[in-house]
Image 1 (cartoon, rainbow, N blue to C red):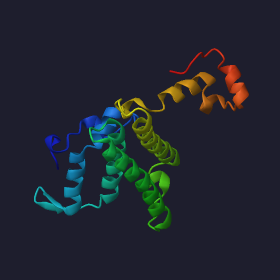
Image 2 (cartoon, one colour; image 1 turned 135 degrees about the horizontal axis):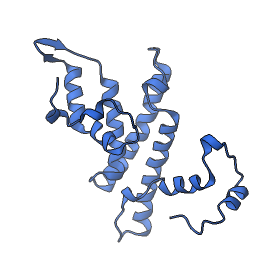
Image 3 (cartoon, rainbow, N blue to C red; image 1 turned 45 degrees about the vertical axis):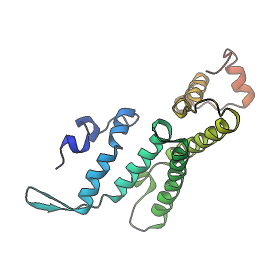
Image 4 (cartoon, helix red, strand yellow; image 1 turned 90 degrees about the horizontal axis):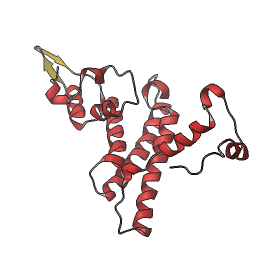
Length: 187
């Protein structure tokens, strides 16, 4: 229907097996993918047959993913990135409310983003805005590298405590400190 030059996707981008593969997520959220989907939504002629599909939800979903990635890895100004953080936060709210209150048989788990994803993105968006504010207020002479902030240091720390899913560890703060007493610092 659309050529690779039009959308820029690879074969492995269509049937994604690893949903944490960043290059795939980045390619899927390209603006030119959304342009192809918008053409399909408006209607296109394929092999002499007119095709029109309702893909508006997918377009919005990809727009939110693209905006979230642009907050941290985009080339826009800090003001534009703060605006994107606001957009992402509001779209998560509006998308969730739409699915919860519309009676089309949609569910959050199947037709939107999970609660964990929404929470992580909400926290990350607020962290980005607060990081920009901190850099503006206290370190205006330094660059504001949003691509360097993230949750990797937290992931590393909590993985030292033990796997939460398999081992079902529940720690008080004191027990966690005792368990990680060999950590001199978190990098």
